[in-house]
Amino acid sequence: MSADLGRTPRSVLVSDRSSFRDEKNRLSSQVEQLHLSYKVSVLLPECSSPPAHLDTVFNSFNSFYLIRKLPVYELLDKHFLESAVYQGSVYGLSYRTRIDEDSCVALTPNVVSVDLTDSSMAPGGRGYQRLLTGLRSRLQLKTDFLLSHHPGGGASLQALLSRYDWSEHRPEISSHTLTHLSCPSMQSCDPHSFLEWIGAVDADISCENSSNSFLSSLVCPEPNTTLSQALRVSVCGLLLPQDIHRLIQQIRCYLEQPRLASWVSLTVHGFADSPVSWGGNEHGVLRGGENFYSLLMFHDHTYHLHLATGAHDTCPP
Image 1 (cartoon, rainbow, N blue to C red):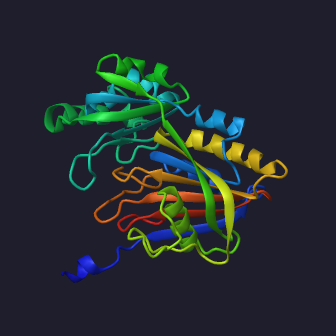
Image 2: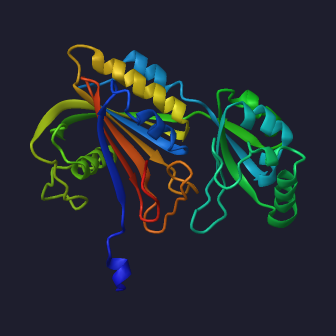
Image 3: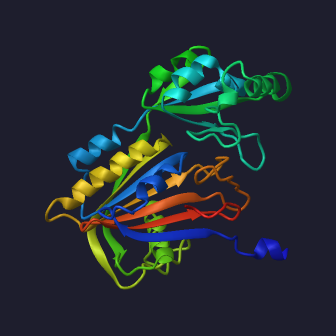
């Protein structure tokens, strides 16, 4: 076997501890920099059903749209630029394309290689015409495309949607009640052990390391306790950072209520095949593709934030 194949892939993990009450905390900007997310998972200890205000947030995530066989040059359409790109934040990603094998396209509020808000890219300008000609006559790329917009939503995208076969989708919500869950000490658990544990919980993998299990040899980090019950809620789709922000704020309100759990965890996963990971940084897959963050929030307004990316990406913010 090749030595390169046997070598553990490099990964990058950045951890931060701060307080929501600290004016210098960078959480908001860090959340905004993971533009293209497909899943958020929340773990609520000692809970069997989501509180009403959290349930409302889960069900109010923005819709997104799947446009079939969209020519990439349509993203330069004058009406699309004026009604969507110039009037808010647009998020889009080619659907079912693989970053290391196919042509992948992403549209973010800060466009990676072509800044559609630059003056030279105004319809009719030299840069605009050059790019439009290239996409129409040379590359001729067509792709199924996921698209969402904040704050206008579908109304801002209607001019583009009306010319193609499209469908609207709501993020999918799933919940699962866990019982007798082994749980590490959140204040003292090291980041790698915590992420390994929270990943196992999210994947519904036992950390009991029982003799009859051939799936996993994971054990819960020590010291640990046992939760009589916990609720895991996941939302999947093309998720906007603005919706993640609202969810974080409502979890903070939840933690302020007396006689409830002292912590809640939230993990957000970026698309493995997105051309970008954090901010405008190029993203690769090969043996990995991970780009995610996990936020552990406490009742005293402090938090632990862990940001991770894979072997071929630059360091998270």
